[in-house]
Image (cartoon, rainbow, N blue to C red; front, side):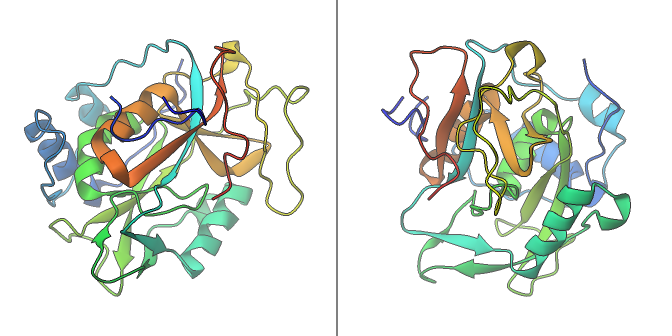
Amino acid sequence: MFPDGGFRGDEANPEEPVVLDPTVTAAFVTDGARNSGGLTSRQPGGTGLGSSPAALRSGCSRTDTTPNPRSVYRLLPRMGEFRTLLLGSSLRRLIRWQITGADSDLPTSFDGTWDGNPGWRRSEFPSGYPGAPVLSGRVAGLLACDLAEAGRFVPVATDGDAPADASGPDDYVLYLVERIVDCLDTRRSSRPKKTTGEITKAVFRPEALPSHLAAFRVPEYRGGVYWNGWAAHRLTELLGEDVESRLVWSEDPSLPVHPRPWGF
């Protein structure tokens, strides 16, 4: 634990089911099971068509989601010699869907352009947009079971590559978080910013917090993805130096929250 309330990578009642996109999920689960013993391996995600959501979850071994204590984080790429991903016009489509929630606005693919020194390694958590977490195929495969209940994977085409049925370490998916949960304590939280909707100080009602979900959004800030502590810790274990986590809220008052969780 660091003074800003974030973990660095070197530290160690559901509603109807949400469907993961089958074109990018099936072999992720297979490879995730195959590589579960080696969290630092960088094996490709693989390709193929997937199973039904029920079958997907029934064959999964999920992370223990028992919170101790309950906590919420914002995840973003760590600043360093890594290439990050710019989503461009794809981001506008995502924001429109996050606002409307309409099926007709639901993105089915994204386009991204790599930013940074071409000689640097591509980050496995390359997107810093608050509501657009992007994962490498390796990480998506290892966490497919844990992430299935809150959203779906949508393929990302980077620098003109085809988004679907690509293989190898260059596979990337955007984790589209669909679950919106009314769990914010609006009396104790700061008001959303008029321009971005960001909530600088978020206080959650513990009894309403969806601790079983890896991630969620709130009605007051539909454009931001919040991660439950168990999922944030799992991601920092897998991603190492690629990711930074900032503590947004905890039921343990002794833990320092980050003063600007949505800033850079």
